[in-house]
Length: 349
Image 1 (cartoon, rainbow, N blue to C red):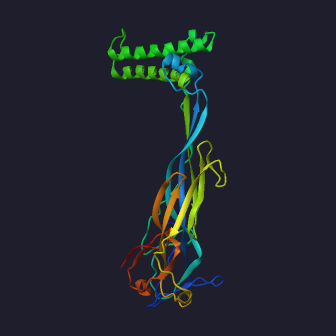
Image 2 (image 1 turned 45 degrees about the vertical axis):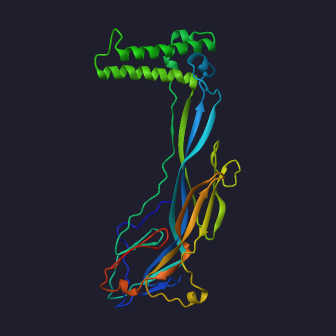
Image 3 (image 1 turned 180 degrees about the vertical axis):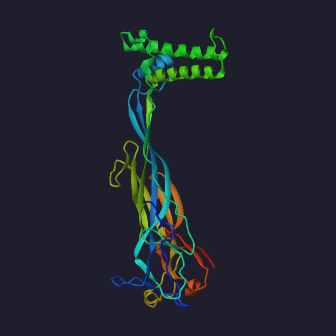
């Protein structure tokens, strides 16, 4: 998933042979005096983030309304998942049908070339930073407080759950009354300074929250993320990209327990493709790069579209060649390519 580059400028290669650049298609099995590079095909990726909320009811849940006037408290445990974010982006993977060799000759200029670890051409005579997409590590946040340490002797010796709940509710009301008295300065031994006052109030707040959990329960939240990817080669119409269940989280694409997230991709044919004759007569006279075609990308659920955008895809387009003179001896051409599509991002002479 990570995009990596060759550290520093480890590879040097020549684009000049006296006055002419020499680039050829890669010939497997033949050792060429040069450097091989590949152009990418485009992968569509989605980093999907989700939160799991696990609710645990309090042991006095059914008395919450009676003694604390808190209605709607559930006495049943539950687990609910929610998708919180979709990060949609593109990456490039080597297209084995687009591998080329730049031959190295004597008396030539050796420009700096930046390749990815997989051999995709990224830049010539300059440097481009790679933006890595790294999934955050899953984590769980626990919210349970130890309420029993705040139970009084009378509460613990009560002979029924109902009586324990009644006494605990009274303890909560007493804590609230104590907090109000302190804030109004109506206690005999007031804290001496602001810091002491904060310590006392913080402790009373903790006691109230912990005891209240015995009635309203608590939730634990777990964050997780997963990456889904696809390399479209033709148009797609509502292909199931992934599934998500409110009870189970991310599930397999064929698991009907999850709601489908669909992917639609339509090639807009913004690039004119060469015919077979043109392909046969094509001559490589310089640096080969991709001309990606735009495609309309939609990610949707059964209810609505949640993402729609036009994105470039290398495999829907064609290739073109930069003039050989751009990289001949004495030239200062700087070139940056999109590592996901192989298209030109920046060309400077």
